Amino acid sequence: MAWVEGARNRELAWVATDSLEVGLDVARFGTDSTAIHVRRGPCSLLHRSWSHEDSASTAGRTYRLVRELMAEYQVPTVIIRVDTTGGTGAGPADILRELVSGLDNVQVEDI
Image 1: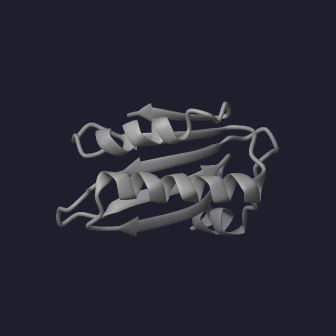
Image 2: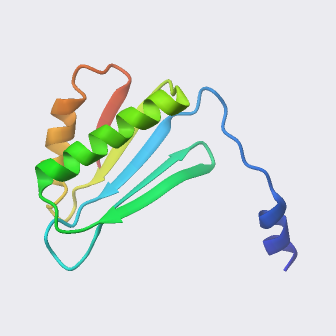
């Protein structure tokens, strides 16, 4: 119980040099949902999910969200990690790479 209380009372903060890290798990049109999670340093900033969206729409939604968060949090770098192991994330990952190609501080990684 002491661990739970300690976690509840702990203040977490990021430092200015911490990257914005984005995780994207793509589901497309199946019964599962696409999920995105964003953190900076030890802090979880947001988690969203949606379903029944094609690859281009998912990439566009992710790109717009990243641009909004970059402006809000003034981050030095952004890493977008896309789960491509099941195949459905490969399309959005490729599209995201194209969308961020002019941004030197943003990279897209397949995981």
